[in-house]
Amino acid sequence: MAYKRSFAIALAVGLLSGLWGCGEAGKAPAGKAGLESVDPSGQKVTFWYQHSEERETALRALIDKFNSTNEYGIKVIGEHAGGHDEIYQKMLVRMQSGAQPQLVIAYRYQAQHYYQSGGVVDLMPYIYSPAWGLSAEERGDYFQEFIDQDRIKGVQVAFLPSRSMEVLYYNTDWLAELGYDAPPATWVEFAEISRKAAKKPFSKAAAKGKSLGLATNVDASRLAAMVFSRNGDFINSDGSAYTLDTPQMNTSLSMLRGLMDEGAAELLDSQNAIRQAFSNGRALFVMRSSSGLPLYRADVEAGAGFTWDVAPVPDGGGQPVLNVYGASLAVGKSTPAQQLASWLFIKWFTQPAQQEVWSRKSGYFPVRRSTARDIASYFRISYGLLEHGQAEPWVVGYGAVRQMIEETMVEVLEGGDLSQALSQLEKQANATLKGQ
Figure 1 (cartoon, rainbow, N blue to C red):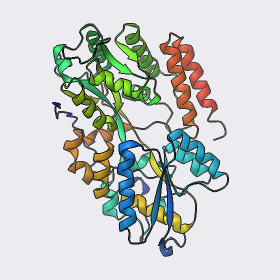
Figure 2 (cartoon, rainbow, N blue to C red; figure 1 turned 180 degrees about the vertical axis):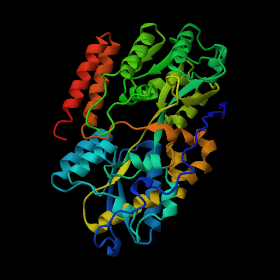
Figure 3 (cartoon, rainbow, N blue to C red; figure 1 turned 45 degrees about the vertical axis):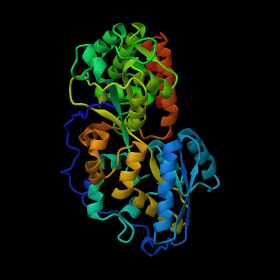
Figure 4 (cartoon, rainbow, N blue to C red; figure 1 turned 90 degrees about the horizontal axis):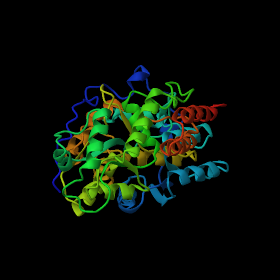
């Protein structure tokens, strides 16, 4: 594959920052009584995850390595428990009887719900434990921006194994045919180039079909990336009210609907269809998680074989702000020994050696600075972007609100009244916050 190594986004990711958790006035939280004397030897830990195919194979290999090398004889039993939503529903049922797994993958709003329901534990005491925790040097090697996403009101409801961000994939060769030597920096330029692409198909397209500026789908995270890049948000700073009826939401959906009306953008029914449209040279742009890099690399090689690259999503003319997301690992409430054993697996999994293996196999960003530096050329992405990352809401019930957002997107993109739809969306979303 002939793609450029030119994702030149020169931002510092806090490599000069001090110790992890600087907002805590330099004090470690008090540990749980007796944690230092807990013995994790011989414990069995059931781990629910959502990964499949190549990622599941890589994860199971790492689990096997932990099981065969950890000095305490801890055995982690990995179990594919379905997708994120299915795991969430299973957890809500299992927590009622205290039969939840000892370790579970969770988005932060899910982990917050589990914690509020008494189903998972605060990881702060484990992180700062003199016997079992992370040293100051180790804490300084984690990306603070990632850690903060799972720290809610002073409670570490989960711990990150990896992250990804929403980026813009683009066909460099086609862009050059249209007269451009760089990806669009603003949404105005993005729309302009997309319209031109619809009128001038790629000369090396490997499949017949409509020429598109943008191939996309209905997804709350895609929309969040557009809104964040315009300095908007989905919720206010303290999580007390959703902000979904805003100029940024209006402008984002108006632009997308306009491009669709002009035939420059199209909604496709699956991520695979979107990837095929791009790799065959029918779509100039795709917005997608950075974790898709390995898949796009393979498909372009098998498809039209053009030069391609990735860039931050366009912005409103100011500093880039990107949607950074990903699921973390929450420790289920069980016995002190099982909880500690679960934490020790998390600690091991996020060590640099394991992070490098997992990042290369999965396509996710590592969460350690040292690993990021070591494999930066593999990702072709500057980790400085993370300094300008923004996360989607953490409040309980956000899963339902995501569904509301996507239903509103469909309504608007099919010609519904935009102002009325956004007003109704915000009211419905805020109704989910009552009682929290």
